[in-house]
Length: 145
Image (spheres, rainbow, N blue to C red):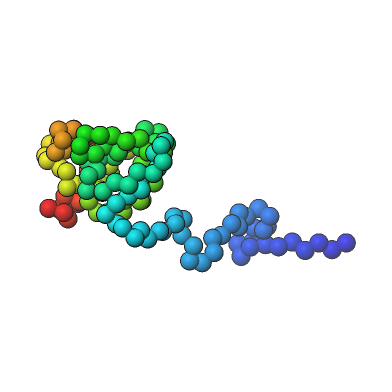
């Protein structure tokens, strides 16, 4: 009985090569166009809350949830990760400054230098800037101000 052995260009047996490929044009993240770029739909425990993006001061990660801190001093718990909330906002004014924090650059009051430093927001909150994200933060400051 003859068996046919398939091999790759490098001569490896096809059975040993992981051949999973994405179709052409497929991207890892789904891009959705929003009708109203000034508002964001936030899934909370009670349902959806629609909030103006300009009212968001900063985002704080808490595991698979995100706290959204608003101008009025309110904070809402959202059933999404920080990355998912950032993807929904999609504006240049929000910059990740730490593994757990994304700030609205329009709410920035002061930046204090240091290894990473920290920022003081208009509502008086201080947020550390990690050393690894300092360069991206400084580029965002140059671009926006």
